[in-house]
Image 1 (tube, rainbow, N blue to C red):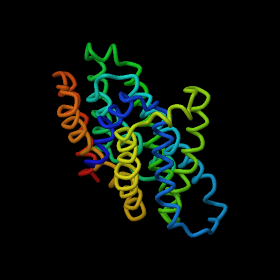
Image 2: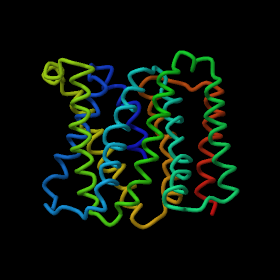
Image 3: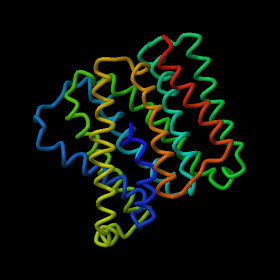
Image 4: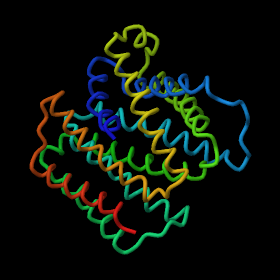
Length: 273
């Protein structure tokens, strides 16, 4: 969870030193594919996995990275983004109940409601008015992250290295196309990236994706989404602490109260059957 939490302040650092947001996501996915490629067995999966695999790859590889880095590019405050990303947990549980038929008890519905209430409270912070675009973008990221977690359950019989390498390839290609069209001068940006920028991109590709997300995807092979994903609630603590040390950011009282409501709700979701 430390690596997942570190993605926000380190991603903002990368964007601040001139890594375009969409290109950042493209490079992250390229690193995932390159690192996993040597371990792949070249065997096409059954046709029944095609749609879930494509859906997972577009949701996680393209959409999550797109909205994550666009939100970081649009925001100066990290705490609301880190906490806002927690929407992925109740959303994933709701989506899994629809598509995978995982049951949601009345107690879980209560904690899902209170988690949304905490997010709503954060939205009333006067400082969020200037960060509203970034906050909305991170909510979009949370939705696609939730979709990816649920779709990964359909892929539990596939090799996790294959699914994540395919995701990396799809994410890299689609984000590269988007970067060329919307950011332009892609080759020039790549030539001008310094060592610090590449180290930050490597951190996101190796530690955040390969060590952070792949661990969670592996657990989905053996446990329900509703049992695994709530541990995702731990990462805001690391994200907010790192934001303090890197940027000197101190969350406002409203953000702290809303964050406590959200994190507590998500934690209790894990304890509730």
